[in-house]
Length: 252
Ligand code: MN
Image 1 (cartoon, helix red, strand yellow):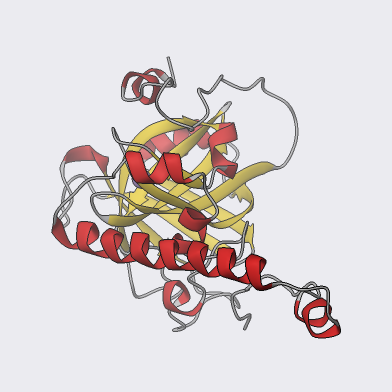
Image 2 (cartoon, helix red, strand yellow):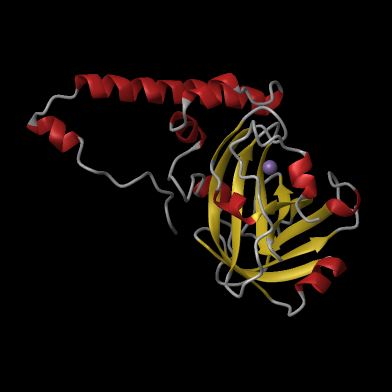
């Protein structure tokens, strides 16, 4: 069954990720998302809702808006549809780390038969997200690509249209479309019991990056505590506490 691999890899008594049910088929716009995932390696999980699950590819470098830049996309196990809105911390175990909802929206296949397109290894589609839009293709390489392996290796490529360009979208718009925050904001917003006691994968570049992010998150939390203690019902404080727009990625 479609979610068996997803479930096999996870202990749902230890992870805040949703357990996942195969959603009933219903006629509506199909969901897509990209989750920026700081695990043993930083990567972007590209997910398309299809047939009650999220088809998933791990894209190490993230999507590129430049049609000349083909991005390796490793096919990974299907995920439950409700996982697509998930942003938070995954405790120790498979995929341990921090998940940021980097983009979301709807997708439309450019072929009538998505199943046949997937089988053929050539799926063309249109995205309507916050960051990713226009026409794209996922094409299976048959293992003929450096860094890829076997038939899990695909390429994610932008088609030339008005949404293509040489803007580095992962650099330009690095933050969450859900919270507006970066990894440390997601950590700092969480219950400390989750992220202090469940250390993600250690070692390597991502491990060092994660250590820095945990430190910055702790400072963010400490800063908020000081601010609360110092707060007095003065005009200046009221002014300072006026609602501000969440941190947002710059738009083109
Ligand atoms: Mn991942």
